[in-house]
Length: 116
Picture 1 (tube, rainbow, N blue to C red):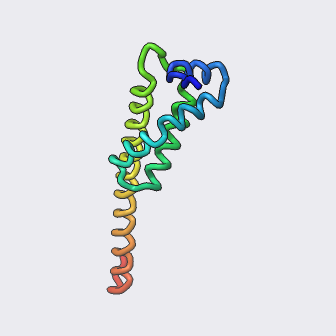
Picture 2: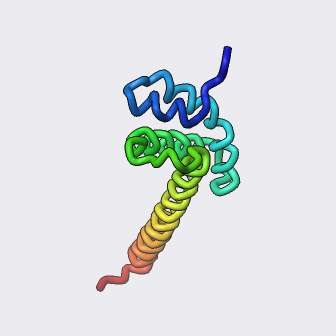
Picture 3: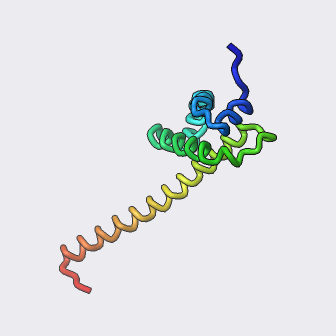
């Protein structure tokens, strides 16, 4: 059986063929996972980012210009999604660090009976 090109599959998805999107997903899922894993270095988070990437791809496919390579577009979305996750993780880490410091300070104030 002749395998369809990315361009043909994308057009089929745009025409409403959900199975064509599944084929694109299966074609690139592992490549995207291992690519993202290089950024994140955590399997579970990398899997979440892969899922988020393909959701974004599906929602944005109508804006995809078939003059460009689908694979390049897909990897661009994956890269941006991974960077977004890293930025959010950095903010979460700063917030957790701040909250930890506040809790420790409160505990020390209680131990030494310090009131503000």
